[in-house]
Amino acid sequence: MKDIIRHLVQQALHQLITDGVLPEDTAPNIQVENTRDKTHGDFACNIAMMLSKPAKMKPRDLAEKIIATLPANSNISKVEIAGPGFLNFFQNTDALASRLDAALADAHLGVPHKTPQRVVIDISSPNLAKEMHVGHLRSTIIGDAVARVLEYLGDTVIRQNHVGDWGTQFGMLLAFMEENTVNSQADLADLEGFYRAAKKRFDEDEAFANRARELVVALQAGDDNCLSLWQRFKDISLSHCQEVYDRLGVKLSMQDVRGESSYNHDLPKVIADLTAQGLLVEDNGAQCVFMDEFKNAEGETLPIIVQKAGGGYLYSTTDLASMRYRSRELKADRALYFVDQRQGLHFQMVFALARKAGFVHPEMELDHMGFGTMNGPDGRPFKTRDGGTVKLADLITEAEERAYVLVKAKNPDLDEQELKQIAHAVGISAVKYADLSKTRTSDYSFNFEQMLSFEGNTAPYLLYAYTRVASVFRKTDFTMDGNIPGQIHLHAEQEQVLAASLARFAEVLNNVALKGTPHVLCTYLYDLAGQFSSFYENCPILTAEDQATRYSRLRLAALAGRTLKQGLELLGLQTLERM
Image (cartoon, rainbow, N blue to C red; front, side, top):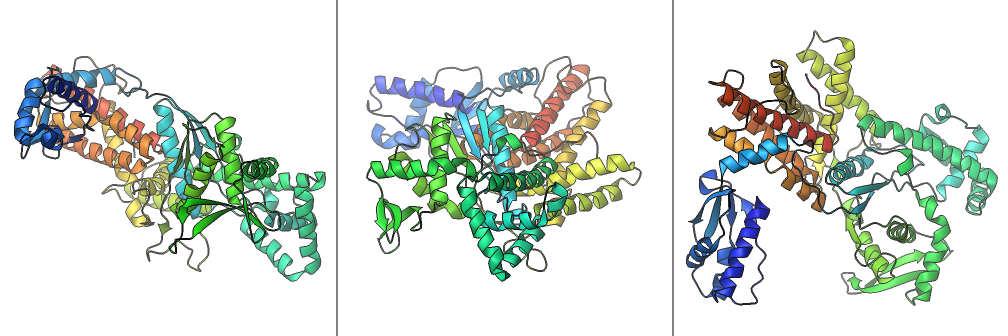
């Protein structure tokens, strides 16, 4: 509808330019917003106020001319002027109902595919030397949700798990593996304990430390034995990660892993190319690039260090190599980096350097989708009671256990298998939704009691809202897939409010795809669930006064249920038919 209205206003403005009412160089950005008060229409546009000065007219007078020039359209019932000159557009409810009937008949819910792109999603990126902890949750699930939305809208999405699988700490770990003959996943069941034990040996035993340093050199030189040990450690560590991804219901697999080590061969070439372009400057033995647009508070130009004085490489070097690979080999139109927002300056600088050096093609979009931290109740980064890092696997287990107690209390007669299945879905969904529903760039406080509540903007509330729709259809011979006869008719206010919200699904998804903001979809689904509840309570469905109304409301309920389910699945949440 917003696109339709923008097009109608554009046509009217073109005519007013032709008529000499507006200057020929008029090229405004036409903004159309949803109204808060539906008595003032469904959509509002402030174009008359924007153009009153170049038109040399009062906004309301210009608004009258725009309305008089607007082409007729069956989707619009009327247009009114409000306040100082807003144009308020009222939807034609019959046309809206027809669009919803078409959406119900469509497996894709009437959501059109956008112009397709190849999009690389840089997601999760744990360090394989340690187990995944809560700090990896946001990158993993926010990136996963955005990837799902992009795929739904028709993009080709290439997930890239840029794991930390290279560096000096691996010499220490390989030396410890060598001593302890690690061969299986069971031998590394506790990665954190293994790392601490290796670090203790490194700090206390000089012979061990020397062996660790030798193994780093040998690994970087491509020694077969070291590579074999390293690959074994990597495979076992990645299997730990995969267990977490599978429990979270995240669409990440071993095939999506492309760690830092995969760019190792290209790092000397990155330095050579930067040298050839005259971009490198030696500073205290290190190779740096200085770009004038990046300065500190004192006005001094900040360096991007791409090679240390001793010849070692840094994150910036690997990031440049990965950008070149994503541009040239993966042919990406867009690359989204879901990384802690505290890395913002780093990404601004390497993005600028990648463009300056020609490592990415000019049209390629590079976006750092930064996020805030997950904090404990005290407002500080989430820690265990003894101050240690919370393992992600332990967090998931606790969520499932708490959900089990909650669900069993509400449904004591459920059999054990179904109880565990529901507890898994509710626990995992609660953790994920609590994160996804917050503005990506904000910090948030982790609170099990709030996220497992059946009241408010929570996963249990939304999962229950969907089961409420499903329960309606269990009492009929129909399904939500569109085998319901008749057509949608929008008479009651609650029907119209629900219908207008359902018609916005495509707009919401495109917003998420553009800005990488799953919380927008969460807010939409929460509002939709509330609107369905109001519709359900005020508009009898199965006991409607006549068959046409019954079918109409069943069709509206079916579209609401399918939209809720699809939206939750795009967030990576598992829906339930009953709770």
